[in-house]
Image 1: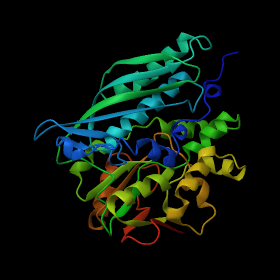
Image 2: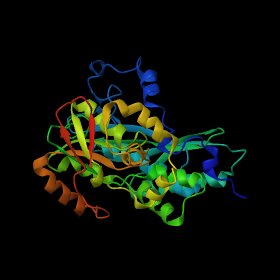
Image 3: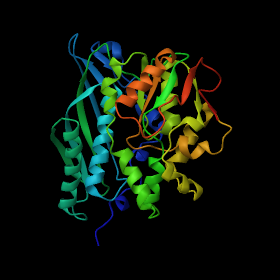
Length: 347
């Protein structure tokens, strides 16, 4: 019997990220002084999605690396999801990917090379869709499976999308529904039904390519992608970087319908609780049902975008023209002046 990829991972997808407080401890002594590198427009001093280096007045390089453990057992699909997720970091900066290199961690004595080849085939399929080469990479023989990409892209130096820049009065949009963490946990536990599996694949393999077009849409002030820290975590990062608070309208947030039944069965990722423990101090939420959704660690989740309230209708129309028709395209929240808490959840 073929071994399941998810049995070789203690975490799942972006949920295997290091705990935010631990990550801060790791990085505290290696934060860059950007003034020492004047052409480094975005570095590790901020919690942004990729680094950006200015080449000249017209071009800047966007660089990211992202890899994680399997959230599905099909190696081809795993490769697709991991590749789409890595590309998302470039799109979240408003960039266009140029090329990618693969990072493959594989237990060669326990799983056949043919399965590893399928992972790469899935990644190449997504890179082909993004019109970039999967140009090379690196592999290691290790007990736990992990796969992802290092991606290089370009962006105009004056058109970089950052998680900082959200302005009081801006409205918030989310380009994908929440719930991939719940569905992938149900899969790992052998509980996921077919409709839930296809819903997971539809969201997790979709490219966030709209990000490359955001700089040409009026009123976009801040962008990030929602991944392992959940909507709460990534919105908190945006609020901290922008010096603001936000209110979130729970009923307006798009959710994968197939995930709801697993919440009722209390099938939740372990990192749902990690996220809450990391961010609860910043949150005012009177709605118990919001816990599972807003803490859910996403893999290749949607873009969270802060848009000027006066151009919100134009922005919504632009999203619809790019094919966003699976759920109502409407604001899920609003940026507020800085208050005691960073996020206030309302019905």
